[in-house]
Amino acid sequence: MERRFDIKAWFGLGEREKVRPKGKARIYGNEAENASARITHPFWVIVEKESADFISSWRSIILIGILALTCIGSLYTAISNIRSAAPGNNDLNSFVFLKLFTVSDGTMPAFITFVSFLGPLIGIGLGFDAVNSERNKGTLSRIMSQPIHRDYVLNAKFTAAILVIGIMFLGLGFMVMGLGLIAIGIPPAPEEFLRMLFFLILSIFYVAFWLNLSILFSVRFRQPATSALSSIAIWLFFTVFYPMIVNLIANAMAPANTADVQQVISYEQFIQFLMRLSPSQLFQEATSTLLIPSIRSLGPLTVEQAYGAIPSPLPLSQSLLLVWPQLTGLIAATLICFAVSYAWFMRQEIRSR
Image (tube, rainbow, N blue to C red; front, side, top):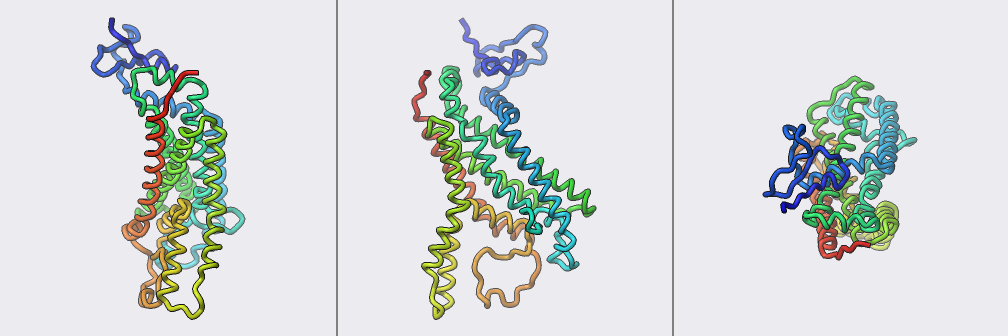
């Protein structure tokens, strides 16, 4: 007797589309829908189900609402102060549209600061119970009893979450651009638009790191509360406590007043290396360089190196080259977290309760 597999019906996504294993005969729901029936890979069925769960869950709605409100608040502050932030007409002040993301009067942080602060919470909120909640409800063993590969579950959960995050950040970014265009009446130059687009892509990579970290803890710990607290603890450490620890080290290792230039440069490079072990520092350096074209260097410069330099904005290609190490570091950290969680998940024993 031929074995029939309908994973979409098993997930409760309706009876219209039937799925079959590769190489099997096609299965139809009823004769009237034969013409419109299509075959969906089980991986994408799980992605569709997880995406629907993310979008319809209250925690996602609350997180997206908080981020949207803060974006509107920072945009209002930037529009109120953009005239004083761009008083001149020289080249350094020609990127007026980018100031929508960076300008603030101190009453409310800029858009770039909000993304740096709230982005990790969104990644943690979408991934802290990705696996352990399925295990506690007993649905993970039911999924694994279906003829699908085990890694489909973890890969699909990550793919669905990153799709939701990507759509959310691109939507918020274009909303800020549209409202800013209506408010100031100046369209962005092509280079400004590309800089904002790269900033949004970089933000997605940054949130993907925290998403993978929370998925890693959801694989490691059986209780969702434990994985959530572990992820938030690491976020608080790198956001609040790690800069304090580096400042203590910097004060203890500060060179004497009689130190030569090489010793001072070595000291600054060492402190900068310690700071760049934090994902938040990598994100801040990369986004500041992309949205503020006047930043020409991220390291210490001597007077001889700066002598004769023309105070002009850096081209986009040079800004990308400048932030390439930061972008590579974020991607590497994301891949390491995903690889560890993948290895743990593939080795875990899954039993029904």
